[in-house]
Length: 114
Length: 114
Image (tube, rainbow over all chains, first blue to last red):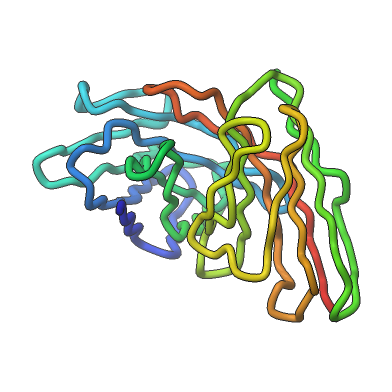
């Protein structure tokens, strides 16, 4: 089945710097890669996702890149702000079994220092 | 917006009690999921359901069972609560399609077993 590895587990940056979080996956058939943001005490929320037919997707200050050959995808946050501080989770579909479901990475705690 | 509602935000139960965690979604999603979230371990899938009365085991089903009698409601049952089941429990739902795995999460139930 699918296995998702996420690095780093913690990341601290100065406000205005960029942050990059990387995930690797094992199933070459995986075709959908979402990123979730979980602020303290709140539910995880989808912030961006990418499908396997594109290599990059941007939404304002966040972007996701996908390297299918190397089986990794990354979240890039530019011009970080204190409100970006949260735990970020990557995920990939578990394509085995009767229905796909998401396998999550262990999360990255991002701290943006003012 | 899709709403996924978990009945309790905080619960304290005694060892050996039978515990019910309820989750209701209002957007006619076929798929529903129960995850537990623990520091350093990320989100781990307990059970999921892709249709009424259907259920499949996730990665850590031991000590849990589920019930899906109606499409909008997915219940997680701890048959005999133990202290190692102290955790944050997150419910999620999604459409049942081949290409869309986007989840919507509930706010979570923090369960403490004493």
